[in-house]
Length: 440
Image (cartoon, rainbow, N blue to C red; front, side, top):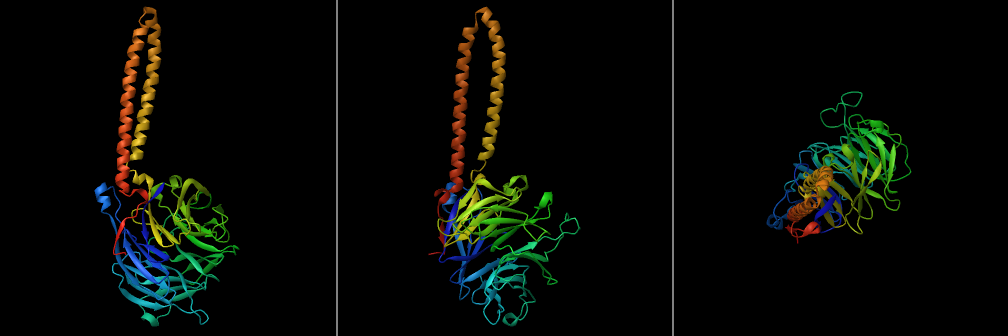
């Protein structure tokens, strides 16, 4: 399971968060308009001394917007970023330094500001921007700066766009062979509907009204109805339910998992398949509720995974989350960012040692049982000769020495495992706060 390995305090309430695609860097947008970028310590198994020197480095910070930074996103190569603020601007900047490259005006809605709600970078020059009105804009940031207008605008929803997820394209009609190149279709949630938009044709397919606010969503590739593998969408609702939608069947949901009827689902994070959660298919998703909890669900089986619950905060919910390049879970909410790492990784090779120990014990048990059978036969013969008593005494001494030796070996393995875990967590333990450079 996951353990909190460090906590990063912020200077304001977090509104948006983005993770670098190939490096351990997290960038956050705050309610006061500031944007801050941090480099997290690299993963691995350092010694206690090395871990004590670990720091979270502040790469840069700036007052990016005059009002809250409502959306953030990296380009696919990680070299640039986009931010969208409640001040009506989209800014394109270098991810390493924060230096602004260009900026755009967000179109108004009925002559009133239309605040941004979510964004998705298609590539280094093109951006998808969702707004509170339900509009979905496609921008080319190379065109005319502040005077530019969106290259294309659709209105897939009648209310705030809450999520944008690319839909994987396939080359064959049976949806078995994924196509190369960037996706051209995107599934969005907004208000109480789901919509699939084709950015090339303005074509929009919309679901029926779900009579529930759809607050977040994540696409799960390889998941599908009745054994299909073409992908499905997990959607978090205001009523504390996660609904599952099969690709190509957007008219209605296929399954639902009740997380908490008293709390909304504010964020969904897909767990990387290589971590092994959600069975052999690895189709697990974290659902973050408004009370600060994160609950893991198996989307393949449509149920909660027992014992897989985390708590980001006692009062503040998670507004954004994701896995970094080292498969660490990064959650942001309130005025903190938390870094979580899989417990099996923290324990080093402890699990493998335990498996080996269990195998050794099983072998010893088998040998012991075989020995007992052989010994019983010998006892019958020796009893006739009057030598059974002396053999029993000798066997008892031998068994006692063997048990003592196994006990010493077991204690030694436990000691080595405990030291490895302590070295991985560092001197502050699993819930320590590392020091930060450049942060008061």
